[in-house]
Length: 414
Ligand code: PMP
Image: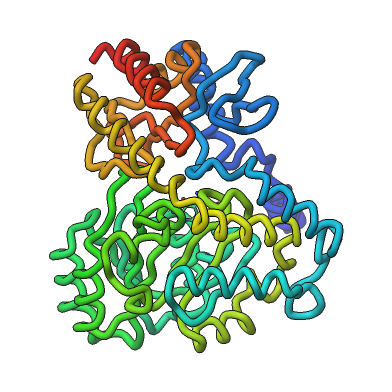
């Protein structure tokens, strides 16, 4: 008997030992991939430090590179208006608000920024979070419940997916931009649930294409669903004045129930926003955990984003140049036999490769020749649909774009 008890105790003791972190699947996966990379002679394409100022010209490992791997679409991160506004905000308010805005972290700058965002999109209000990721997670996680249905494009961002999981709602996916499939799910499933949310993106960050917004609006109205558009890559980029997907497609902003955007890409700051009608914004202001229980956006970042929105309006040539660069990239890539997939040629463009190892090798080879791009691979995109991703800024010259494409073509042997 004591022997049996001892065995039981030994088993319990064993079960109580904390597992080493090396047993985590995440750790195993990363060591496996790094080992594989080493074996194939592929340099780690991630976490490359850019030294010196960020910009289309930067330094990696001490060598000058043309940087196609960042999202400063409008070249605003070194714009004097943003820098001066940021510095003035630090002088006026300090470096941090050090509290949730609900308790004491609110400033007039936050309110001004939110009004400017709402006016730009053409909706009643907006709420600024410390990151776009937090905005998506918290918003979807707050407004949707286990009684509800979320239908989303297969390529929506991780932050939306995490928010969906948090909400406990039933989720269903439709193939990228296949709106007949979206309609089919709405027709067959909508009536079984209390609320229904359709989630799409403005400019898809791995494809460079956009949805048919007018049709999605028509569908969500017909089937009584809310529509959320993650315009993280579209805000400041799409539309003649950079107002985003609504402007690009000619659909009024207030036809979409929930707009999400980031302040960290075209607006060269940090943080994210949700914009929509007054009731939505009030509900989130008092209940979204990533807002209520998190610090307010720092004054310097708030002021930079506000200045950015104003510069975009005052200097329309930036959006126009970005669009011209995209069309040039598209034409010149095609002329070289490079496959840009479904990209509409605005803001970001993929060059399709296929196998992950081939794409990973290509990313390090183009970098050796001074072109910094990013590797997009599974699970971000389907297996064997790996690609090099080129983010454009309005600052690239036509010669720089053509040179990057010449190098890419030579490396891929296209
Ligand atoms: N949505 C999309 C489509 C994104 O690409 C990103 C950022 N990569 C986010 C949301 C999150 O935004 P942030 O970087 O501001 O957290």
